[in-house]
Structures are given as C-alpha cells and as structure tokens.
Amino acid sequence: MALYITRNGKQFGPYSLTEAKEHVRSGNVVMTDLAWQEGLPNWVPLNQIPGFASVPPARVPSPTPPATPTIPAPLQGSRPQKTFIQNLWGWIVAGVVALVKFKFLIFGALKTSLSMLLMIWVYSWMFGWQFAAGLVFLIFVHEMGHVIAAKWLGMPVSAPLFIPFIGASIIMKQSPRDAWTEALMAYGGPFAGCVGSWICWFIALQLQENWVMAVASVSFVINLFNMIPVPPLDGGRICAAISPWFWIIGLLLLGASVIYFHAWNSIVIIVLVLIWAFPRIKQTLFGQTTPAMQAYYNTHISNRFTMALMYIGLIAALLLGYWDASNHLSHLSDY
Ligand SMILES: [Zn+2]
Image (cartoon, rainbow, N blue to C red; front, side, top):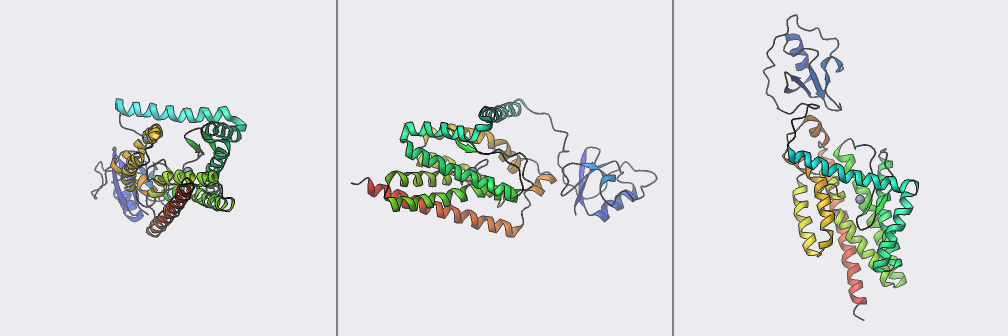
C-alpha cells in the first residue's frame, strides 16, 4: 500500500511500508510527521499508521527530508488563501445550496407529496392535468431509481423533492466513497426513468392516447438530458467513473442541446448547473492532484469498461424511445 508523508510542509512519496520504515530508522522521518495512505480520510501522525508503533526511531532525527522522487501536493486541511473570485463562487454555491435546503424545510413531512402537487399544478396550467400528472409520475420513477440504488449501496438519502420547472432531486446525506459508487447511484435514476418511459410508451400504444405518448416522449428527453456527462447531472457522475475528461465533451453537448432543442428557457437551469459544477470540474481536471482524489477516481479498468457499456446502452435505449415516440406523435398530428 502506497504511503505519503509530509515533512516541513512538503509532501513526499509514495513509499512502500518497508521504505517508510527504513526512513524512520535512518531518522529522515519522525513518528510525529503526518502520513496518508489509501483508505484514510485524513492525514494522521505516522505512529497511528498500523505497523509503525513498533518501529524504533533514530536517536538523532536529521533535518533533511528523504531523497526520493516526490509528488508535490497541497497539505490537506491547510487551505491556500482564497481569492475574491473563489470567495464569490463559494457564496453563490452556498446560496444555491441554502435555497434548496430551505425549500426542503418548508415542505417538511409533506415534502414529497406537497411539492409533487405543486409541480402538477404548474404543468397542468400549461399542458392539461393528465399530461402533468403522468410526467411528474415518471420523474418520481427516475428519483426512486436513485433512492433504490442508494439503499442497495447502503447510502442514506432523503425522499425526493420536487421543484417546479427544475424537476426533482434527492439529497445525499453522506458523500459516496468513490467514483464507482457515485456512478452506480447516478445510474439508478435514468435507468428507472428509461424503463418507466418504455412502459408509458407501451400503454400509449395500447390506449391509442396522444397525451400518454407525449408523456413518454418528454420523459425520454428529460432522461436523455440527465445523461449529458457534466456534473451534477447523472451523466456527469456516471462518466466520472469512466474518466472525468468526459465532462469536457459534456460541456460542449450541453451548449449544443440548448441550441438544438431551442431550450432557451432552460438557460437558467444550465447556469445553475454550471455554478454548481464549476468548482468540481476545475479542481478535478485542472487542479493539483491529491492522493485522496487519486484514490477517489481510481476506478478498476474492468469497471470503467462496464460503466461505459452501461452508459452507451442506456443512451441508445432512451434515443430509440424518443425517436419512436416522436414518430408516433408526428403521425397523430398529421390528421
Ligand atoms: Zn437523476
């Protein structure tokens, strides 16, 4: 297991356990120096790392650090001074999060049913109540996909919260342990949404009802939009387990989808998405790599392939559904 050690504010490593013990014996490293290895949430004094308590320290600790190739990285916990822009970002993100949490509090015990009713009301006013109820139900199916996936992974989450025009969201009560877990939880939503939309498509064919097919069509699009590989969209979380570099493709797709669907009124949502996602994208792709971050994104190669296949498969199923549903709708509107 690779071990990193900080000495006089500088980071050294990775070392094997044997190498690190050798540095302790030679006096290059003292037991109170901070160390980190995969699986640890924080840096701890070296004597708290299993196997080090028994290592006899050198009589005279030398002030020179070990002469081994180094990976410089900032010390966890001691953050560099923030610029004004970084502070501003912090405040904007905190504001958005506070807004979401405030809404969450308002709805209280009735949060799910009440916010769902509010959303039905807003959409009914625009499209008619049947369409609205059907669509909100399918959004509920999507969110329950996340909840079931989270339960399956043993992660605590809140009940879904519905916000008119924006959709629904669930709030994670605990950060996922790695990119793979986050990807599986993200996948549950659009997967359930896709299955639900296809069932809706089947019902629409049986009943020969225009509005049911419209619900299926819009639901396919909503789930497709969520598959765009930019965090915090589900696709962004899924692709982080393949490679976070997919986010660049996602940013381009996001811009293209606004133009293609003439979704000018979703600019607000996209701006919110970008405000939320920007710090993570910047830190992950262009920031300094920390051991904790390396460990988080260190997905096994076979899992990367599995997730890539699952991702492509789901997009294909959603595209096929959307294509067929809109074909049915265009035939119906010809009469
Ligand atoms: Zn989702």
